[in-house]
Length: 274
Image (cartoon, rainbow, N blue to C red):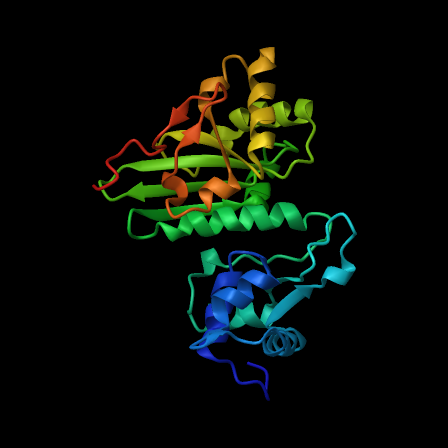
């Protein structure tokens, strides 16, 4: 801990939230700076965030540094090295859940969506399922390197339901910038990577989840899969959803959709109440 800056319980909770990845200024303000009479003044919030940033606990991507196209009128924060040290050294949070990320303006929109999904994956733990393992893009890059494949999924996670059954999913998060031919090629490669990415000895079924940022984009991705002849045999293996649907209270237990639009009420076939 840096001398001269007292870290509060609220700061620790904020660090734990950012351990999964970056978050918008507005979300952090509303989640962690709420008083008995409502939200803490934005100026007070910004002063605290500035002090934490200067001391290395968090990093900040100012809205002024973003391009006009990517500017949302608010800054984005991520966990800094000192924040990582506090969470890991003091065993505040399991080390495997702490993601070390650099704020990159070129990929920040995509990373924010990935982080929102990761938070929703862990939100069900332990009330409905236990997260056995979760690999992000950086973890998977190390596994894929030996297979000499350039396309890497965004996530791979495994959960154990309360009835003892296991389910694994490979995830592609689409932020709307990938062209359709490249998108379908990604999915084909991910099918080939299924065995490479599976931890040694794992026998759980593996599915593929595609998460987009809007329903219109999801519809385009579904059509791209259906209309691609090479994908014909692979269509049944993929499920689609939007990050906005996943963000609701059901998380991963929301209905998902096949490429042809059919609704899948539950991606985990075990009993939800088991």
